[in-house]
Image (cartoon, rainbow, N blue to C red; front, side, top):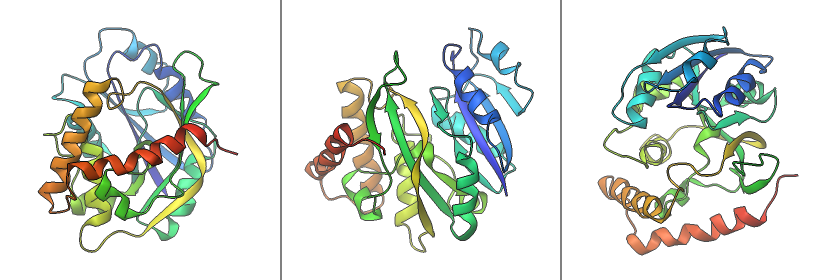
Length: 249
């Protein structure tokens, strides 16, 4: 199986080296690495150029993260596709080997993720696991960690990519279409930590971002006739509270 990893970045010189090294380290599977840059003005592209394994590099202005992600999808040639952005890295050198193994009898897989301190990446702030996820949880805004999600290319071809009208919740909207549309996909959970994610992503940066995230989640659910009401979104916060307490083995 050939797996495409898409990295979307913009002025990521401080972190993207970790991302690129973790992809190079993957073993036991054919990997295509696609980097979509938003026109960085720092040293991001110089760092990317040091890694000859990167199959495709595009650097140009985009209309937002989901436009960039769709550009990556348009260039992906793998049997399965996932996203590892410039604040993230694989925690283990067999992460994609596990992805390929679990995809052997599935259309999509998700794994576990650790959210780490941006200044001290050895410090785990949250343990975001897929193991307890069930598709009904999307109705209250809870989704599995998107950086650990790998989906067969044929599924993207069937249900489409990311809705660029969303600023923060485009990955949530895609996940709802993936799991809750008629003829839902065969899905498996990989019970291992695959990815580390630096704290401070766009959807969790501050209270304004969290409120916008909730509004976009509600809009996505309502557009599909799945909304349980705005207050129902707060039902997902016990899941988030547990992430602060739980730790990977």
